[in-house]
Length: 208
Image (cartoon, rainbow, N blue to C red; front, side, top):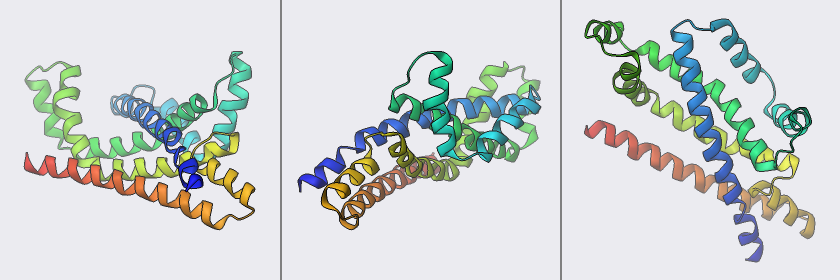
């Protein structure tokens, strides 16, 4: 029972990485999508997205934690490095999801907003993005779940998340089966919870 609790305490680190990564990823991804739609810095944005999607996440994590710290002359703690890395990586995928959502909207939405002389900020905030997020909700839920599972990579640089704690217990007991099953149960429970929240949000949209 003590081992179950010890591994479970890693949820706090996992949640920090997931929540921070999704916040950063959603904000940056939204900005990249809007800029690309407006044809601002399209080539640079496409290059950034291509690099983030085309290189291993574990390489990006190692680069941020080991290389960036030495470049800026400030040591990032493990959680901070994880949040930054997962946020940047997720932003590339979220940017593509939002782009698809924007392109799925009728062009008349933008033309009507311009005809009514609605300021650009309010057009995106009150008209375009609410419709986009409603249409991309299933894809966003999938991205959150994917990011949750990717946070296990923080164990490679010593982050005390669920996976790392399971590895410690495994080394102490000289068996991997039960500790990894416990870790899997925690991850699966979090996935079920995320899916539940996603369905509740989707139902609230349908009611409206």
